[in-house]
Image (cartoon, rainbow, N blue to C red; front, side, top):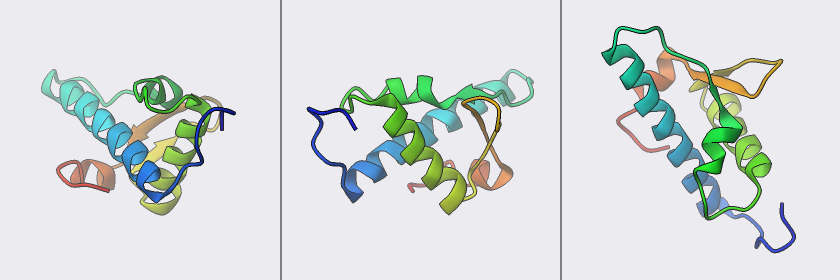
Length: 97
């Protein structure tokens, strides 16, 4: 966490996870709408979109933990920062985390 960033709380976790999850959903819908296979996306790049939080590595790690470990909504590439939606994640795109 950046030194000037206040400590994260459960509300922050929800904002981080929901925003990145729904961005992944939108990217996935776009791929499928253009008859492309779902792509991999760098979660740290997606974390950069959340301007309210200074440290994209924190945001990416927290979000990945929620979406992968707790929800099973994404699969991650162990060699990169890339993630992609699982079928379970895709089926939950219309909801909130």
